[in-house]
Structures are given as C-alpha cells and as structure tokens.
Image (cartoon, rainbow, N blue to C red; front, side, top):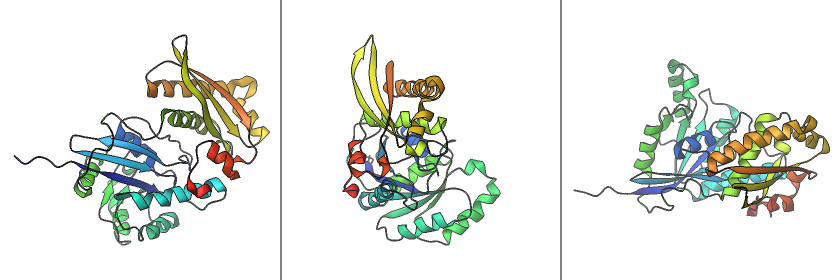
Length: 301
C-alpha cells in the first residue's frame, strides 16, 4: 500500500481590511490567535496560524489589510503585507461577495507580479443569496490569474473542507515545521497584548482604537495561584487616555474584565491582569517606539 505523502507549506492571506482574514485563520487552527473586530485595520503585524492534520501542515500568514498609507505605522503594515508574498508557497486573496471595487482591483493587479499560485477566496457567502454568487464569481474570472475561485464562510465553516482539499492538492511535499499542538509562531505575550487591544477596538470608537498600542510588561510570576500579567496601554493624546480610563475608571475596568476572560481561555489558567494607560505622543510615526513595542521589522529602519 502506497504511503500517503505529507504536504506542507506557507500560505499568505491577503485582502482589503476587514474581509475576514483573521477570522478564517482562527477557524482553521481551532483557537483565537489573531484578533478580530468590525473595524478595519485590526491586524497590524504578520501573525502565523498553524493548521496540522495527519497528512498536511499549513502555516497561514495573516497580514494587515492593504490600503493607502497615512503614517509610518500604515506604511509598515502595507510593506508587511506585500513582503509576505516573497516567501510563501501559495497566496489566498480574500474578498467579499460583491462586485469588484477599486480596492480589490488594486490588489489583484499587485498579485499579477507574484510568482506563486494565487487563489481567490470569496468570504461571507452566508450573507448573500446563492443566486447572486455566480455573477460575482464570473466577474472575478475575467480578472484572470487565479488558479481557482473558492466560496467560503469563515464564520459558518462553509466551503472550508474544499479549501483545505485545494491546499493539499497544490502544496509541495515537505516536513512538519511545527509540533502538532502548536497553533501560532508568536510568543504568548504577543497574543495576550493583541487580546487586550481587541477589547479596546470593541469597546471604544472613533480615532481611539487606532491610536492605541498594548505592550505586555510582565507575565512570568504567579501570586495566590494566579498568573500575574502587567500590561501598558499606550495612546497618543491625553484625551484618549481619559476615554480609555473612563468615568471613575469604568472603561478600563471593562477592558480588563473582557480581556482577562479571553486570556484565561487562551492560557488555560486563572489570571490577575493589571493594566496601565500612558500617553506616548505620535507613537505611530515614531520608528524607535514602534520597534520597542514589537514592530521591529527592517521596513522601519
């Protein structure tokens, strides 16, 4: 009997902000490794989620959504997205089930320069009538350059088996890069900081979420049977600090309660979460500070 060949490789998730890249990756690995929200530009850094089965390991690289840069951080995010295409085996271009807009056309044009196979993944198909899907798929067929077009719903699991079967078909034979129980290449403190930032995205509005960064200062000691995590929330202006803290500290307390629950689910243990808020003026345009809090890629040098 012929032994089944093991397939492995790196797959980039590319698309406009808020098309569901992080949601898909979290669904595939079975646990939250990338934060999600209904606000665009949620993902700021390259995060890899690792899917492992008996005959395949896929390292999904979730990238920031591609958009026109307005600051040093935005520029970094765009470069992080595009640079990820140079060192992967396949690319999944994710789009929403609607007529092609300028943003999708812009990305599709960029992907014509990519040397690896590109697949179009139309997400959120559960949100439209099936009769409307075929004309949308036809309009994308006219762009050419896609190996296959795959309709899915990352929240409902629709089309996921077909997606995985397609990856298995096109990925090369290769080794298992990570142990079967590892679901991300990021250290725990990075994911913890992201989970706190996720709650800020969900609970605050206007410019506050995007003017916020989170750094975990400590998470290596236990006290009274709980893991003590100390983290600092950075904002750009005093007014934003007031919003994060809230009247009588109410907003900060809610951010802490919600974050602690997510962190405990991730780590599987009780957590004592301590949060501070500090003003770091114009941090998004400060390369040295961006490096300090983890955006230490060469694009910022």
